[in-house]
Length: 229
Length: 222
Image (cartoon, rainbow over all chains, first blue to last red; front, side, top):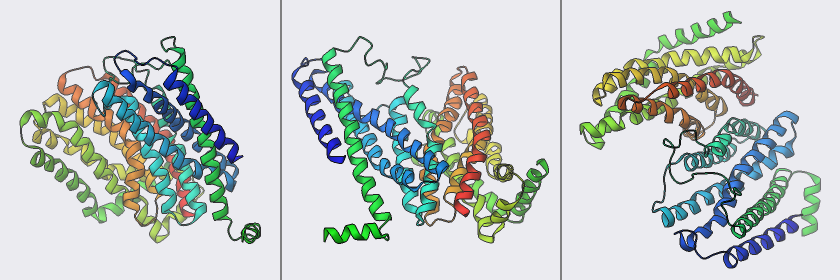
């Protein structure tokens, strides 16, 4: 399954970027070519939020059903989610600098994305700080659920009730609201989808490693190792 | 159930009264941190007035976090915590009792010392009252959320720093609005919305946090 997702991700990303670069206008208002960073920024940002929800869902499944695999999947999701969040913040900084003249702005969405990064870091830190894997899993899962409160705040922080109080860079949240040129929209959706496929591939590879590592004392793993030589 | 709550609160307060220094160190940490900023950032009145809410809240956060380790640590060390987990009373009541006692000892002094901060930072009288009220609503939230972190990191090496890493992101909304209300009060704008949202945080934390802390305790102790 991993190669399937891997190839899908690669093809979609290539296709999306190609479309994005060659089929769309050269200028968007006065942002010139820099707006194209949207192709990475939006995909990474959507993934960062979605992966946190996925992680919390698997954490909940693990706590409720007491299944080890759920915890392993949650543990595998965390680094990918953290990378996505970091990418979103970093590409956002570049976009901000080139288009609006500032690297960072402290508007609600940016700040809550930063908090999301801290939540991911906290999850990974707690897991690695506890030696006993069972206790580590369950503690970190509880933390993930507590942090789940933050994700809706990011998602809806865009629709701030009082526009005068809310800040600059992310103004409205309607991607298809008719304002976006179709070519750009398609390219953006394709690259976002490609990010999603990449997440699948990376997470599945990682969970495979985690399973092998945790079950290394079992016979099936030893047999597998012997086969490999 | 209420008797259990009262019993836990009385016990914790009695234990703390026997070691008064623990309580006072938290308070003095807050005072020292608050006093450090003017020394570092310059004593110009305009600047200090602007940064006062933020500084007071950050200091409150840090003081609260330092005190949190003591919430469960001593009970964990001598086995009382396990006994608490085994009682027929609902664990969240006992946890709420411990958090309440902890707040009385660490959060409430901060509220009472807020006028001193106002004095050092040249805050107008209205703003000082607002700050006291905001801290009064906000510090219990800090204790409640912090208790979850304290329960999760019970007995871990490197626990203090890890606790900070886990808890500070969750503290941020409280701090944003807590500092915001004091700034707004200094500028004279309407405070209703800020207090509503701070109270909302308090209610949410009061309801959800003891349950989460109880679950975390069971995970950490088993």
